[in-house]
Image 1 (tube, rainbow, N blue to C red):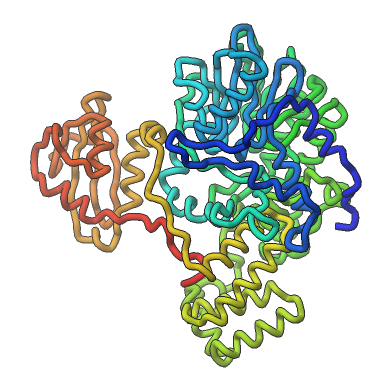
Image 2 (image 1 turned 60 degrees about the vertical axis):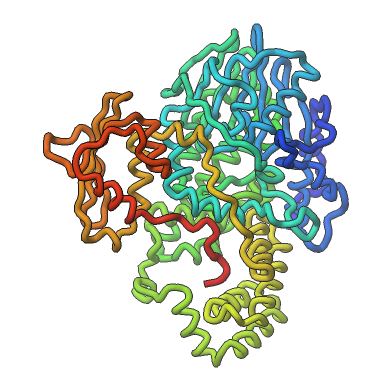
Length: 595
């Protein structure tokens, strides 16, 4: 950290550049008065870095907490600091195009209102989603009711809704650790999450895209604004506004090392494709832009600076990919590679390559997982006991819970907090009632969190400490937005049903149900066989146990438990009850730091 240029104020100058006005007060509420965003709760970041925060992360959090309306270049504006992401507005002939309308409708509406207060009441004439994560589309109904062009990369809708359904309960639970909403916003608690301050908690929405971007160089014009797209620019979709000489990088290259595999859980990203995508951006648009803006943090001005950002970000992901492969081919495991791999000095010293959201350690393990999976090849790791059973045996070998705690105290005195955490984790998993071990592990997690440069690591550690001390933070009821449910394809509806089947309970059930969707003119069959629910489109003319004739809306209502009223039924009506009887329900607040 000694090589980091804390004296260099250029990032702060760029984060302030083009400032027009703040939202005042910086608090956004729902119609019934619930606070969904409070940027003023981060005012403590104006002070000097305390001992309870990593100086580099404190600096990044200070930059991310800046909020207001900013001019990027003539005709292009951003609202920053009113959600996890930025909302960009491009002025056209008659109105304004919104790029990435934040997470919540309330925040998006507040951002648009702030823009209009200073740029006039221009109507929203188009929307662009640069990516299928919710911080790029969730607030869309806060800026438009639809009826305008909505552009996104091909496959956007499938990715956007599937990630919220298939593993949605688990990723939602882990997001509580990643973003730390239950932590106090203070020098001792949550100070940001690397990409921005935190995620808003308002109303999520989705309006399906009307225009697919499918190929590099594809041109689209909305309200007189010409755009040239590159749909696979690393992590997300990039595009150039030629007349503005402005380049949108989404979050493919921002002031942060991004994550190839989110700690909340996701599909593993491809570091090699990311690097090649950034090289394509550099080749296609590098000499045609005077400013590059993104969906997080502040823009980069000047051709040379844009080229430097793109080059270094490209090299970052290429290096992570290639060096991980080099070392795994020498026999190193993911944990070993993460321990020894260091970035080149030029990247190590670059603020925008620091691991505030993703990290070198995380990304190395992601590359390893992409190529070799979870198994490191050591037979001892092939069939290990699950955590609780292993913990009981480790604690027994070490002489009992009290002995484990004493060993942990020794490692804490030696400042080996990593191993102290491993020991105490065994003690807690072996006996959740061991209060001394729980309290000590909470202390270790707190110290690890306060020393972490990575914001999501900090939040994970501090949330672990919080739940060890106070118990699990209750999860809210299932609030999957109606817009996301409405966007599910019929195949995704049945997929979401299949992952809820309790296999062992369904082992001996055999049934087939035909679903005739009268409004779509489609026929589907679900067959329960050997505990698996098999879906067929246009099934063969074989007799099913039950045939249902219903609309897609009735299908969703039936699966949500609203009954079969209005549904035409033919055959064995007990088949539906038997299917419902073997469906399981997710646990929204499962344990993470206890067994």
